[in-house]
Length: 333
Image (cartoon, rainbow, N blue to C red; front, side, top):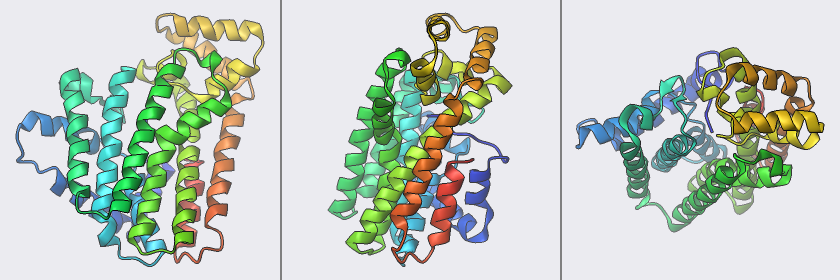
């Protein structure tokens, strides 16, 4: 899943904008820098591993761990190492995901396998995962179990995505959401859950944060799907066209396949089977924009936003408004 970047992104602006959240972001970045020392050897491996981190990103998952810990009136410094481990795992998954999808860019920078080669990209992802395991070695067993369960689900979701992407016409919305729940929702869920656990929240509060995190993760994936389609027409680059050319499953495309006439389905099917052609991609974008598919997926993203808010209602969280604002921004960034 490619994440939007740039100073115009309202979600990124929110997470880095207000002084309290900006202070949390600084803590996360400082802790990540410590975990990945610049003087480590082999230098090229560590440079490649940190390349996606240097390229930016929202830091949504570690930020959510800190916010969840704070929600139950816990000390955020206690969950900081766990939050950083989660972000390293997420970054590793992006490196491997880009390699599998043969993506050329992420956040307007070359992907790791393009810049450093496929072998280094594989090792870079492995290194980040290993660093995360090292950080988590002193964590309570429940934290380790929660994160390891999320990692397993991410791998399962990535495999499902790999199968779906070549045959979007055969994928149902139910199966896509099952994939997204694993590939994206699982780690966001774990981030919120670990924050609640480390902060000493009640079991009811931890369950609420877990449900909140999963819903936010699903909302994020669906909004990314919409954002990716809308970005294609403006950019029409190889990397942004991937979702239409069989190199990244997308619910907008899947919904269009399942709800279009035979002529439209045949056109989309031929596009996926063909070489990249920006003119044909533009035609496909026009077809999708004239359908109900973009609005349908956006509505689903907002539905999960509401589910996230419902999950935390009445839980006596001290930063309820921040949690609600975050859920809303994820579905609309």
